[in-house]
Figure 1: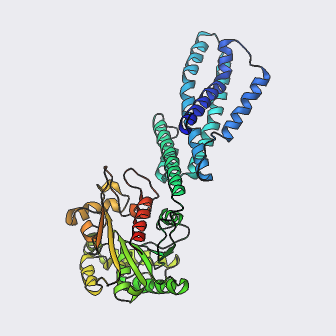
Figure 2 (figure 1 turned 180 degrees about the vertical axis):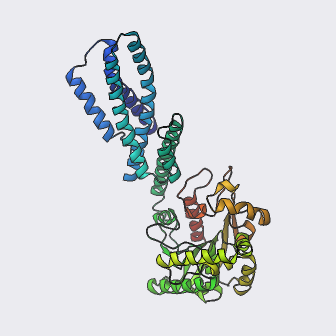
Figure 3 (figure 1 turned 90 degrees about the horizontal axis):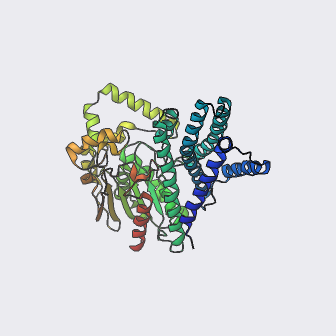
Length: 450
């Protein structure tokens, strides 16, 4: 019996043959000297319409992936049928030059071919552009920019097709994995999970700071809450906001304690709330993700080298913008100052690890400046020069904290950046599955009884 993968290849190959015949039929009739019966033409037209509506009958986990997968199939057929039409077109040109067929016949064929291919292409590219998560904006823009540039348009189309197909494959496999283990509830902890964001971001329902991670954890049984502190403030102030949030969740739900997973500065905010503001009684564990426990050289460098006028302008612009976005009293300079090496040394004296709270830390390593997007590609070499291996912002030595340290250094040339660790760009890349990493991280807490 043929497997699903083999059957998909056979169906795709059948579509290629039928579409190539359909698109080239007008000129083939001239070459071979026959007229296709009316009912056959009707069948061909119906087939072409049905193909553009239902390119595949593959099963996907959800409607978005179905649309994306069908779009990828349409782009594949567009590329294949275009290639198959080239020899026919060349023969037609040769026939027209020799006088065997009229130029009008060739022109009519070309018009019909262009219309047919355009229908397939636009049907596919619109589906992919509207539904793909992995197709970054730069690829969308490059696809538009190079759409009419020979060779470059082929390269971009291949890239777009591969990314769409890869996304369908990865998401389908992940859906199957979650379905297979759904009864295990491997992320169903004794205490809920509180996700605490880092600096310069807010928790938003429209654009989740943690990307696709919370949904993946919830699929596997986790109960998720968010810190909801302001985007930029001193550690003390952010911790005070976080302490109120922690106590309110415990009081409202009766859950007794929380497991905190905090990224970047959020780890410092969480430690301060636990050690100084009495939240140790409400916290079972703290997992910090790429947190600069010993400071961030990049922040120190900015404060020491930027002019007062520049810092004042940036602070005014930032605070004004985020006040309009919902922050009560954003304080850009206070947040940056508390990320410096010297300030973190002072804070560490004030907030020792508390008995009864399990502390662990995670940090990733980027391999080169190009691993990350701005500003991480700019800060990476600076941090590398002074502090060694880093994620584009935080050195691995600075991030090490607690009873257990988990260094992430995958194979390959890319590495994992500060932004990758929260799935900020919703990007899948070889060597690291960020969603599965968090599933296993939370599953590990479950095994420890948290």
